[in-house]
Length: 243
Image (tube, rainbow, N blue to C red; front, side):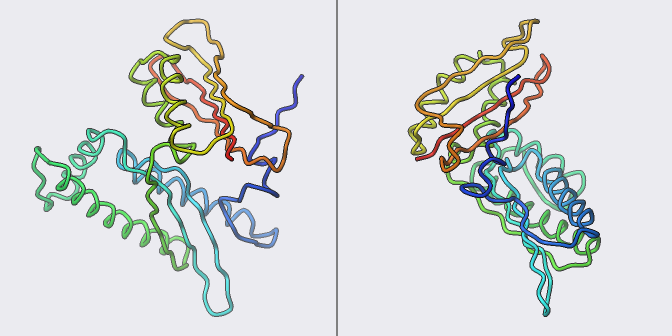
């Protein structure tokens, strides 16, 4: 049997960084771990249908003078404007004082989305400070291009699979777009499950360029992602070998 190692964990000492940066004694480790889980789940839950979140980095600063939690969210606006409109309409029931018409152009839509993001951030900060008894700072960093982050690429593939686009067409179209956006030496995309609705599950993959998985100093980005389609779960794995 093959012994598989996660490429991210394999390269933590060389090219990869931790998503949570803090140090604590063994007795309090579970407390910090639970807090990190709550922070990530609450952020994902509150920004669903509005932002595609790539990474949530958590830094804990403990000084003699003060201690606080710094949260950096790396994201991009949702791919479809319909999801953003759905998000706004759902919020109308909770906050009727926002006067939002059904016909919104791009500028007005962005204006209301920014207002809602500010409102959600204020609510999250108050909630976290009340629960964790610490000062909280949240920064949102928007990714400029869809293909700059590996998790966003996985979500793009998920979106196309849910639209019932044939998987071969998805792979053949997205690979040139990734190469034109990022400087790559190679990539591999693997999809597993009931592809195209066929009852027999199988694994298909497409690879271009080099992919030295055994070289620790090679900067390889990796993600394992699940797409929940009408045919069931479809697994998506992506490897990117950066220059």
